[in-house]
Structure formats: C-alpha cells, structure tokens
Image (cartoon, rainbow over all chains, first blue to last red; front, side, top):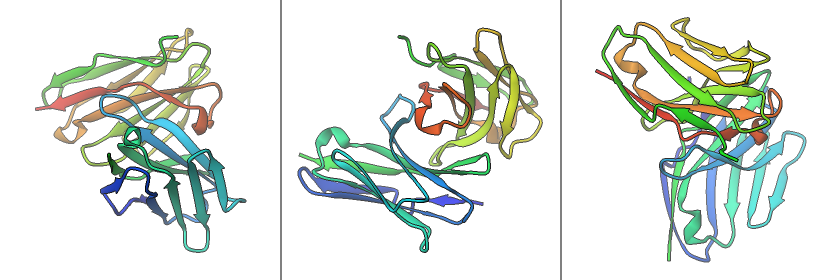
Length: 110
Length: 114
C-alpha cells in the first residue's frame, strides 16, 4: 500500500522557469513532510521540510506547500537551474513511521 | 569527514543465501537507519538502531535483522534471500532518532539475488 505517491515519474523544465513537483499522501496521521534530492550513485540528501501546522515553508529557491485537506504537497523550484536535475523524493512521517514516495526525475534544460 | 560509508558497493547472491551489509555512520552520529529501494520505487524503511537496540521497524519480515556496535556502526543481515530482495540498500545516520531532516544517507549497496 503506497501511502505516499508521486504520480509524475519525470518532469522537464527550461532553465530559469519554475519546476513544480507534486506529492500526495493517504494517511492523515502524517505530521511532518520532507523533500529529498538524489543524484546518481549517491544517497538522497535532505532539501526542505514542512510541519503539518504550516502550509508553506521557503528556503531560497525552494518552497514547499502543504494542503492538508487535499493531502497534497508540492515543491516549487524558482528559478530552475541545470544543477537541479536529479530525482526528487517526497517523504512523510508520523507515529514513528516514515514513508518515501516513488520519486520524480527532474531534468532542467539549459 | 567521510560521511556515511557503506560496504560492499555491489553484491551478487543466489536464492536461499544469507547476506551481511555494513554501514559506518557520519562522525558524531549515533543513530542508524536502513532502507530498501527497489528499482523504480522510493526507499522503504526497514529499521532504526539507537544505543545498540532496534528502536523502530518497518513492514519487513524477520529475515531482515540488524545489529549496531558500540562504535555506532551497523550491519544489516538478510537470511534466506529471495529474488525480490534485489534492491539498493541505503543506510542513513542521524544525531538523534526520528530526526529525518538531519539524516545523512550513504551511497548504498546494490544487491542482486539470482
């Protein structure tokens, strides 16, 4: 049972434009959400997170939005840069459980 | 700082065999978590070790076991290997249990079961 879903396996964006990566979850007990970035042959690295008591968190070019009623979160990258090309995983935690989504491969075209 | 290191990088086993994967946490970290990432999937949490004890466990059978040593390094053992155990096994370390945002991941061990 996939409790965290990323329905877009891949996304291509022009350099300088906005990248929007989406994530849906099913368990209303999740109270903390995270985004990770993964380059080939490396482990995932933490990017940004948001608590369920917030609806937005911003860190430089990265902003995460949380819509609890829709059980949906998104990661916005503005402006997108070629170095942002990677696989992005969303993850959710709650009640000592931690789940990753299946990932979205982002390609930023120069 | 070497970060999180894992060994071996690649491994090939046959069905029914047993395998041991190793992880050394980032310097100063005392908590180690293990994840299984099957092809095309996201990492799935196996278990977490803190103070040499298993503190949390995901939905994995007892064939998956682990150990943490006094120097905080950890091993993941899988018995009676199945074809479906073929995956990338990731180790992550953190300063405290449950601190996912401060988890540092290693590059993983890729296991192929034939």
